[in-house]
Length: 192
Image 1 (cartoon, rainbow, N blue to C red):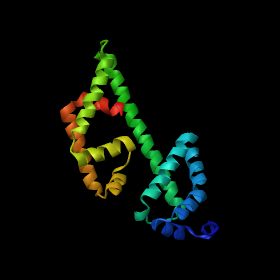
Image 2: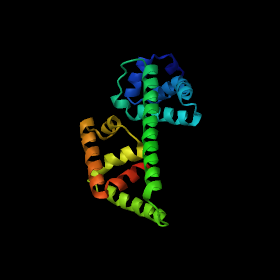
Image 3: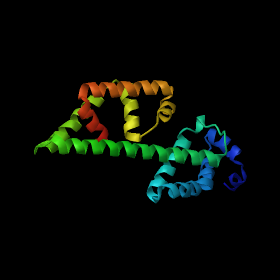
Image 4: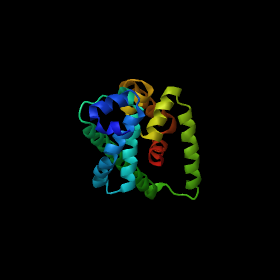
């Protein structure tokens, strides 16, 4: 393992691409704490920073066979962490926006003691409609929904083009909006 410490980033990247676990371990040991510090300075949340860095390194390992080092390894890892932070921020902003809209809607006119029961019914209806999506569309939709993967990450994971992934996402959203109605679809976005 000590011989890996003397290797350059380019050499480590080549070994990583070949599936060398020791090279991955060296990359992790060399850069993980630096990328965590970089992330903590921006998020001011150690747990969130560690989660993001873990995601970055998991993605690095999962996509090692297609990994191409075009810049320095540190620059690649910092950029990957920054992109994950931006994705998380966008997701939180959208979620907050939809939650505020729903709260406004509820305060204006959705009253009744059975609204909690309705929300459980909505969840069951939503899950039923998601399971009715075509298999590939459902798979892509669930990767976005549960793992918060980008189109590029889904495309790489499923060996598809990004355009194909986007097309499946558009179909899924359209089918869910059509079958659920706009209100229930917006409720789904807020719940998940």
